[in-house]
Amino acid sequence: MSIYVIDDHPLMRDAIVMVLRRLRPAETIIELDRLDKLPAAVKQHGAPSLFCLDLKLPDVNGTDGVAQVKQTYPDVPIAVYSASPAADMEEACIEVGADTYIEKSASSAELTAALRGLLMADTEVEEPVAAASGKLSKRQTQLIAMLDQGKSNRDIAAELEISEHTVKVHLWRLFRRLGVKSRTQALHHARINGLLSTIASGYTGASASAGGAKRGPQDANGELPAAGLEGEAGA
Image (cartoon, rainbow, N blue to C red):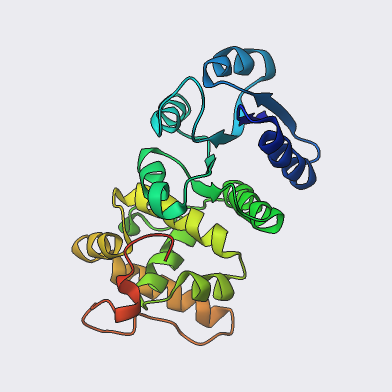
């Protein structure tokens, strides 16, 4: 399998490739300057394991390229990077299939953290839990329980000992699994489908067996605390 970096700007493409080579030295990395070269490249170099995609390519408009890649390779994660501020384009990219959004103005450390988070999340074993919780992975059940407690991304990252970028990736994947677009919608879905009680039981049980304090939802009525009203995965 190969990582595909698609960008018509050589300097930015080189920067992405340099980071990827540090993170995945054994991985084959294919560089392209246009999206329409992708089918032939995949045929020659093998199935993709990750896409790093410039938002503004010469042969596609806006988020169309992201949507095309996701439609063709629905199970492959996509990192989109752009000169546009995240506030302007991040949500639109996530809606059409991106797994993370990176501003081109990000530092080398920020770029590395974002790509490392995506690669770690992609390799994490998604072990399903009980069918009553909608065949969510254990990580996803943890996230719903933490969202119900009103935890921020920083709180979740600290408790799970992962980066905030990785938290964002996990949340976006959770939202897709549930067919929602925000924390509030995810919790509403969990409540109306009876997921929270099952998840809380399993989550607190896991915490207790690990020797930690029990961490069930703070509000017995299932009300979302004020901190949990942040609408997006990037909260």
